[in-house]
Length: 254
Image (tube, rainbow, N blue to C red; front, side, top):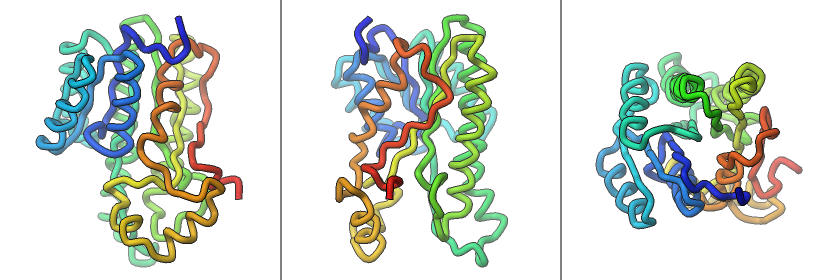
């Protein structure tokens, strides 16, 4: 098997109808994988499904709120039914928010934790159950963030969730190794996504400061995560697990 060859594999990406998730789906499709995407917006799902189908790969799109346990269970079953299996699962679905800590309500805290941490747990659990039952190994990938490593003012809930998935993946790497399931995290830096559009499109002090701190001297585009995603999905790397792959243009070096 050639490195980066995902022929015959099925890759699931939650939050796969836009941003980093759609870029991951495109990269894996280009490497030969069939693709499943989950999202909560029917119109965005349909548009992303059409984009990905143009690659010639099989594509399945499901409406799924990853914070809803029954929705995740049903979506996983529908995905396996449509594509036959899930070989790699990217727990990418996430939401953001900026609220000073002293003003943060429990409702706001739980809004972000529900999707970014609980949603990752539910998604990865169902994917792992499928992989263990199938008995052919696989790859689980959680999309974390450099916010899990650096101080993230006014984003305490987001940072806590993204740090939580790092610990989750380290635990899974140990627990699931005997089933030949690799468990890793991908940590993007500042990326030009819809979630951050209000920041990067308007520029300002935060954009200037983060760009100056980044040795590559720009924010990432979603497509910058594609090659890393293919690497993490590639079944050739059997000995690579429990890792935190940072793709941030050198932001965390400073």
